[in-house]
Image 1 (tube, rainbow, N blue to C red):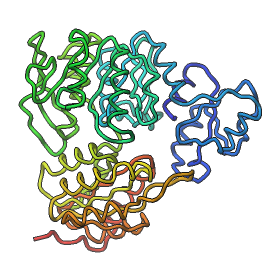
Image 2: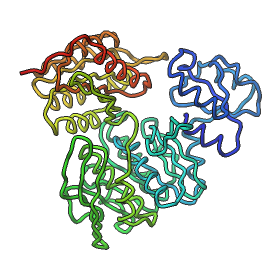
Image 3: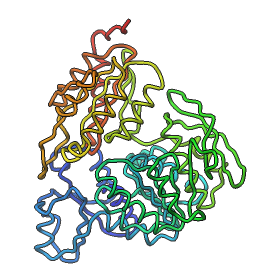
Image 4: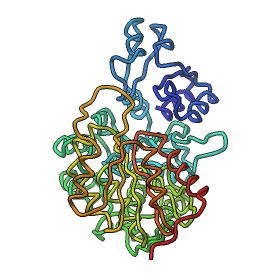
Length: 460
């Protein structure tokens, strides 16, 4: 909601808002940032909705019982969803680039936005994460960029079905895997999304998106791949480092090649970069320009973000919360030696119930024998949901597969356990979504390690 509010405000509208996190006293800097940008804030008690000429924009997390919605219906104010408003802005742009897929949407969106900005195209960018390249002292929460109106770049969400509202000129689909919906539902949503586009940018290394490419008209598809050297955009000659990865990008039709040096690690980020290169190719940005910009791409907040190191223990903050993202995070970390202490806070009871088997398999198969997994109860900020499957279910499944997994209901108690376990050479990875305070939690772990009387000795 924050980036959307900034974009609408920059367009000249009067914007106010409410959030249950504000009422609960959480993430105060983010709300102060909104106030500093002229966005008024109200308690979520209906006091901000008083006139019929107001438009109330609600995220998918806002139930009908929330006082603001009740107040809107009482005074006759129009109610629209976040997705409806965003889609209307997106669809109105002369060139719209929509990024979809189970994983990698935010990073790919940030990469495309930065390449276009570097090429002088002045895009408007709507992202679900803070893009570090656009952060300034005045804009610490740069999840939105307001451009000149020609190009609108946005990640689009399939979890609530709102992807059906978008009519992209260029549709990017990174991958497709079980997450919020069944595969059958996802296939329908993504195929319809691609069908509405003039150009479809598709990952040929993912079985589901490759199948979509086979169904689409060949002259409308730009395929990208790390395995198929006949793809229009392919990556080869990878060289991994702890803080980045280098590869050669190749464009089949022109024969052009360029070395890309990413400052973000992991093979999954090579695929994100290939998606971005393919998308901007469709917007008339050359391979060389894209490679130069990607060399300066600094990544996103909470995407394998190193918070710091103390006593030889490194703290990493990461958005991983579904099987695909967790698998990518573990693969990136295990590209180099060292024990992993994994903290994973599930992003709700509903997703946990849907993904329990896949989560167990991903964690158990991705952990080394000496890694440790600690899980608190799922994040829960209120509302109605089926709470029959909890973190203890995942922990039991991972333990049954021979890995060290522990359920500690309280998050602060998890933090104490992690600090007590940590030894020099370990990496603590904080994983989870839908909770901005996870970054604060990661920073608290670093502070606890820094203030420890005596860091734990390295394991033999």
